[in-house]
Amino acid sequence: MALKLLFFAQSAQWAGRRELSIPWEGRASVADLLDRRPELKPLQRHRSALKAAVNQELADFDTEVNDGDEIAFLPPVSGG
Amino acid sequence: MATKSRSCRPSAAGEAASLSAKPLNLGVVMRRFKSPRHGAVVAFLGVVRDSERGSPIRSIAYEAYQSMAERELGRIKSEARTRWPVEITVSHRTGKVAAGEPSLIVAARGSHRREAFEACQFVVEQIKARAAIWKVEYEWGA
Image (cartoon, rainbow over all chains, first blue to last red):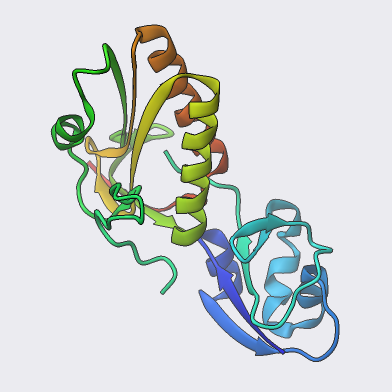
């Protein structure tokens, strides 16, 4: 399956990119992606500060992802 | 790119989009929003301060996860409407906003002031806590 990963604000700085498309075989959670994709290693040390969204909805890190999903990594919001 | 904002994009409901890369103008918002059917209109402007932690700044750049932020802003407005008999408009900047310029306009209109004040404050607080919008870059200097 193919997944689209998005990185916003500080998470883009940590990951060194804003967007990444990756192939993935088998079942996976958001946490699996963080643990097993080398491009996401820089995010691991900031995990306590990160939230995840799957298809524009906040999601737990153990949320399973599916083909075509858009997974975003979000630091604490600071709008206003 | 997911962060790109379109200004004043009409939504399916015909409302202006909540996120804008162009300067916000309270007068424009008020001309569109106030109506003789509503006796109370409360507006809040969030303005970029000219200093942060004691150091002067020229601007702040805002970034949004546009689709998620727009959805959440819609939910926040809906929640306010379920709690108070009001209508709400929200405009939030993306991109670079100079010190002294507004980054956020929230306005609530209702029959009476109490619900308009309360709803406006509720929406501002919820936006700051929930909307996928970030201050990403400070331009330091006087």
